[in-house]
Length: 108
Image (cartoon, rainbow, N blue to C red; front, side, top):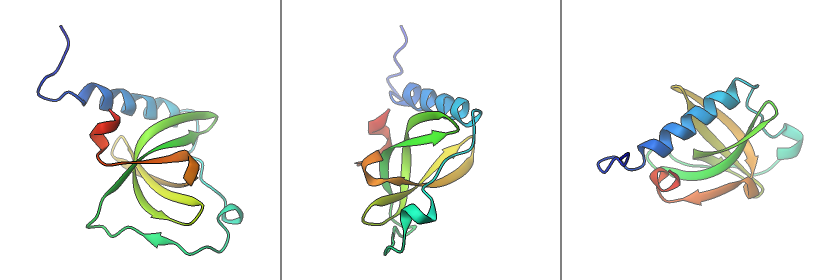
């Protein structure tokens, strides 16, 4: 019982969405401060290109590892976007908190 052969990653995706919703209820999404980012050159990912990652995000006092879309980066930080109930939230995380993946389904 219980395996979805047509959509095998659906259960993982739904579990991640539930975890993001619960974390978001605990507080706002944290981001690096302007002082932490400093005056750095920012590389921007074109809209026609999709880069994905697994990143540690902090909502209030809760840390969640989630599938994110990489939108920009510097030598030290990554600007990511995550969808929580249809709302796209963006933040900066340290590069060490984000691991690149080829496809979002590989995380689920």
